[in-house]
Image (spheres, rainbow over the protein chains, first blue to last red):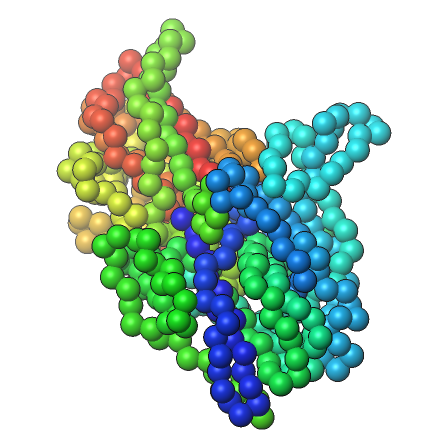
Length: 256
Length: 206
C-alpha cells in the first residue's frame, strides 16, 4: 500500500506560515507501471531516472471517481500552466519535455492504428504503447528529494514570490525523470493532487512538501505525520500508533 | 487500485502440484502479503539513495521454509524473513536433495528491517536463495507482473513445505549482496516428494 501526502504552505515575507492544504494525494498508475518495468527488466537502466525530477502546476482539476478501479489511470494534469504563466522572474527553471504516457488503440496491430492516451481507463497490455507530448515542466532540484524514513521519500517544491503570480492554482503533479530511459527526459506522472484554488500573489511563497511511502503499515518502520492541521493521514490505520510530528520547514523556505 | 489516495500493492499466490504424467493439481490459491521490505526498497529507489544498478531493485530470488504454520494466523507486513528457511543447517542439499535437481541456487546475505545483515539459526550470515530466471518473469498487464517458481521433482524432497518468500536482489547495493524480503506467504503443508514438481505462480499488482 503506497500512500502520498501533500502539505502546501504560504510563507509570507515576515516568516509567517499559513497551511492551506494538508491531505493525502493520489498515487497514479505511472508509478506502478514504472516499477513493473524495473521488475521485468524493461525501462531505464539508471535508478536516477525513476526519481521525482519535475513538477507541473495547473489551473483546473482531474475529476476522478473514488469508486472507479481505474481512478489512478491518468498521466497528465488537467490544465498545466504554459511557460509564460510561471512568470518572467521566477526562480524556477522551466523546460520543455516530452511528457510520457501509456496510450491504447482498439486496432493495435493495424499499421494505421490510432492511439489515444489512457485516461481513467485501462487496456490490455497488447493494446498499449508508450507515447508522449511536449509540455512545460519545472525542475525539482536533486537536493529537494530526500529519504525521510526507511520506507518513504519526500520532495520539496518552492514557488517563490515571483512565480505564477495572478494564477489560480488548483492542481499539482509530481513526475519521475525518465523511467523509460529515452534519449531525452520523458517525465511520467507519479502523484497528483487537486485542491481549492490558491490565488498566487507576490505577497507569499508557496512551499509544497510531498511525501510518498509505505506509510503506517509496519511497526518496524517509523510512521510520520506532518502535523500541519489537516486530517491525520494515518487515521484510517486502526491500532497503529502515530508518531510525534517531526517536520519543520527549513530556514531557506522563509524569505524576507 | 481502487482507493482514491492509495496505490494498493497486492499479490496473489497459486501453488500447483505437477505430476510426471502431466496432471496438474492446484493445492493453494490466496492473496499474499507485500512486506514492508518492498516499501524500503521503493523508498531507496525513488529517493535515489540506494543501489546504483537498477537490477538490484528487481525481485530475483525466493526461499522456501518449513515453519510457516507457526505464524499462519499472525503474519503480517513486518516479516523480514521466513520463519525457518531451508538451507540454514544442511546448506544447499535442503534444496537440491537429489543430484538430478535442476533448481538453481545462490548464497548471500539477507537484509534485516534496518538494513543490517540478518543471521541464520547457526549464526551464519550466508543464506541460500532460489534463483528466478528472466523467463520466469512475465508482465501480464501495465501494472501487474507474474513470477513462476518451479521446484522440480528432485528438489526439496521429504520436507513439509509451508512458507515462501520473494526477495529484492540488493536494494542497498551492498557488497556482499544483501537481499530483502518483499512478499511473503505461509501456506497449508505440502510434503514434497519426487512424485511431483511444485509450481508457484505469484502475481504482484501495483
